[in-house]
Amino acid sequence: MPHHRPRDLARDLSLTLRSDKSGTVKLDGEPLPNAVVIFQPLGDGEMNPGVGSIGRTNDRGEYRLCLIGGGNGAVRGTHRVEISCPVDDGQNCPDEDRATKPPNKVPDRYNAASKMIYEVKSGANKADFNLTSDKPLTTARSPASRR
Image 1 (cartoon, helix red, strand yellow):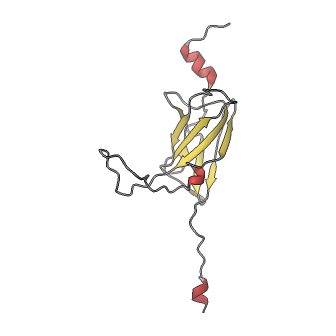
Image 2 (cartoon, helix red, strand yellow):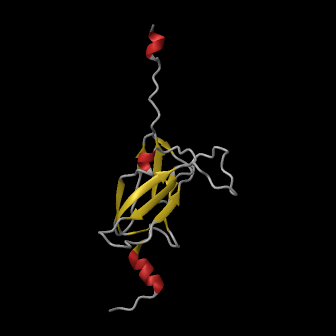
Image 3 (cartoon, helix red, strand yellow):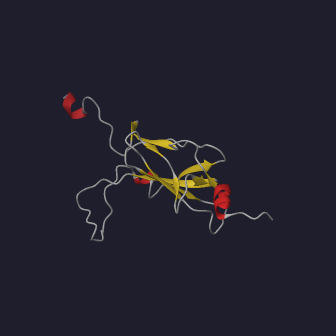
């Protein structure tokens, strides 16, 4: 069995993304800045399928994943993806515990209740996410204004 130095093992187990970004996030067709993107490996019934990855979008909605604990990319395999974008509602106080979670621009179906799955493969991967909000569609004229 070959002997692996820790750096070699980390390289073998993880996917190093080959570009400055690993994807984009859009909400209702517009880039979503300051969103948090989390990839959590699912594994095949393994107790520890590997470390998760996290990234944050820039003003253009682009993100790059980093392994939790250090390194770039994500471990190979199937991941559950969560995307959130908490809104600073002025109620956050770093010295206080919060009883309620802050408002989020992204609906729960993409974070707390996410069923989004992404397969990370060998080589470069680009995962783009086009999300839609829960806000009702607006029309030029409402039914009440037609009277």
